[in-house]
Length: 252
Ligand code: PEP
Image 1 (cartoon, helix red, strand yellow):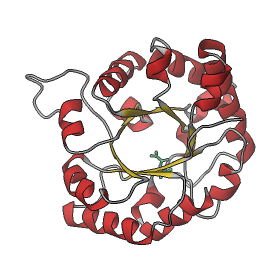
Image 2 (tube, rainbow, N blue to C red):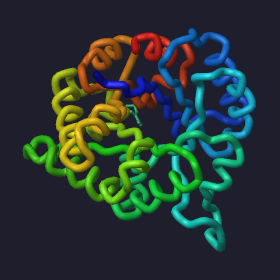
Image 3 (cartoon, rainbow, N blue to C red):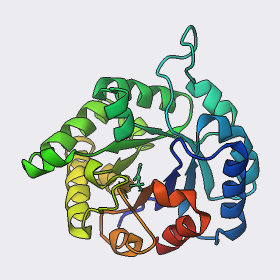
Image 4 (cartoon, rainbow, N blue to C red):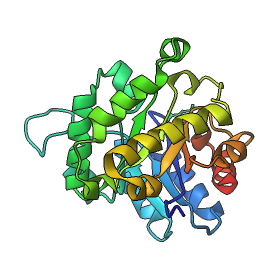
């Protein structure tokens, strides 16, 4: 039997000013029903401390940053270290999001360094992977995702890997309103789990939470989350509205 955690994580991206972010966090706290699902708010850096205070009393509500720098500290103007993130109460760091890979040219090697830095600081990486539309159309999606997962994660020790959450996010489904079908999601999640099983063994594979991301909405969450290998979601647009986000959490 799997003993993996169910997780629904919101990714606010570069949205909401400081007060709007606090309001959203307060709404989530006020309306969140007790459950075993871990709920994560992925807020912009500047919001983290404020949101951390607001959610601190709620057990299963956690805080994520959306990026970090791979070095400990030093002359990296404009960057944020994992030590800083930990010091304001971050539990998770979203890493390797397709927007970071595409717009900021983050490579598998760089993401791997950030994963290690995040773990060393005592936080948990939410490691994103996923293919662009032309890659899927060419039938190469498994090959590409396998490369992302192997290069991004597979030099971790089993102990470190056990702390990683994987998010499969087909790029063609992010922010487009197009969702992968439950079958497409299940197929890729099972494939990713098989890669983990091959490398780290069945037990660790069964204990790894694999989230689906890409236009998850209240209307499609239940069907996606009911798939055997889908352990929750990484939610962009719909996480900006507390009612929608909580309806997705409830679908878990
Ligand atoms: C995301 O950016 O991680 C995401 C899944 O976005 P959306 O839900 O808006 O497609």
